[in-house]
Length: 360
Image 1 (cartoon, rainbow, N blue to C red):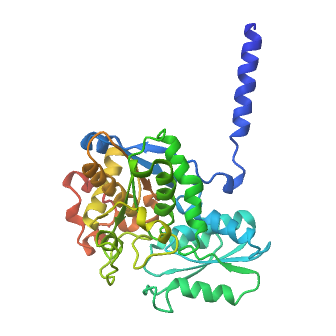
Image 2: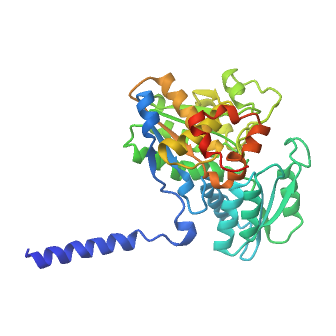
Image 3: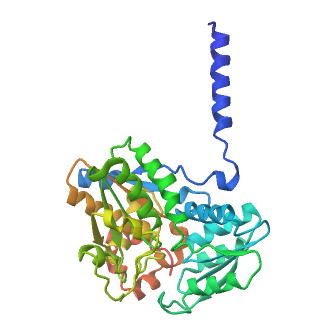
């Protein structure tokens, strides 16, 4: 083959590859996020601390995956027709993902959310065309809980569906079909541990199920829990649910019950770690300073948990976790001196990282 034919063949191959890599709109761009090695923490622990960069999804969070799958599930079951309305109760990120998918598919979107969530999330939802109802944050058992209000709203509308992210197992299925296989492929099957926090339980349960089916006991699964959640105690006490108390700066994670997404896989979770807010906020700043990664408190909590898992499993292991979303959705809180002071967290940030507290 002469040089001209060689170059022509190479160009043709590149052009074909580029064409095949074109995503089909917003929906087609969800998933296939990079797996990042956190270099400083990997050096400190003697393990590979690997983080799935879910903030690189087109809607900015891991919840894009669940949003797509719960809407697809409604479509497949004939629960919504073109021009219909999707209603969801959410702490923010699933709602943002749903709002994006609704815009892409031509649906209306209604979101109920706890009023204690960041203003950035509420504003973004409205910018995406969603009808947003911030309501008082009350326990799931209370009929005024945002999830129950969302369900009642959907029932009053024609051609509407409540996607029920907490107990709709299409959420879990998203991670069995996408996140789990991606992690397995990106580590060449050499993942030793996976850990993340849970809100709906979909990410943890789906990834856990896929990895356990592939590797059995050769991979360990841990749950990471913030203050105010009962799941750490449930797992470490062999299934005893205690009354929920306390709260956390993290948003969208922690739980007072076992959701239908988590229930099928709760028995395959090998352990749990409780992460104080002081450690989460410190890691927000460490990741920014050491890795150039700008993520929220739930992502930071997951990384703290991955470090703890590495210590428990020992050196030489590959530990994977989830970077749920970017810090820009929380920046007026996480980088505000007055807000940090109000939560008594300013002193948790080391002196050399205080320079990043740039808001009053």
